[in-house]
Length: 170
Image 1 (cartoon, helix red, strand yellow):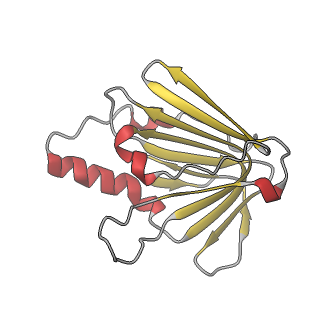
Image 2 (tube, one colour):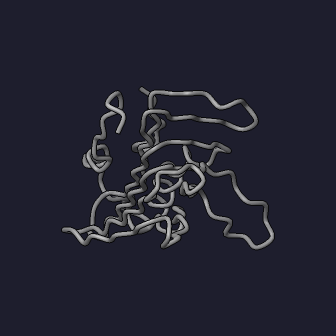
């Protein structure tokens, strides 16, 4: 993992938040946490860690799993389930691809923009199942992290993260 971008548990950013009191407040909080992912963006990295509360399950894609090229493990922890996909060869042509963002809830409507990740080595998705503040975040790291937004050329960055509804760039 890139030592310039050390992983800070995303749950720590949300630890000070409180659970929304009304359905309207909850919907507003969900939109705020999804907003940084609702961008036509591609991120290429070696490792990706995603943390979410279960209400965002439908907003986080799961990578395809080819048993000949990938391994997948699942760990049950205290209040969470973590799934880890690993590219056994590390070859770029066996990279994982997944997207995070708003879902197209209206049939026939244009798909909303999303942030897509191409991950060469390992994807970790931790879903919190206990009662806690709403959480949706991601940390992309590695020796090389590339970000392309829209039609712009990709650029190399030290790392890419989204925590508590804000894009973090070291």
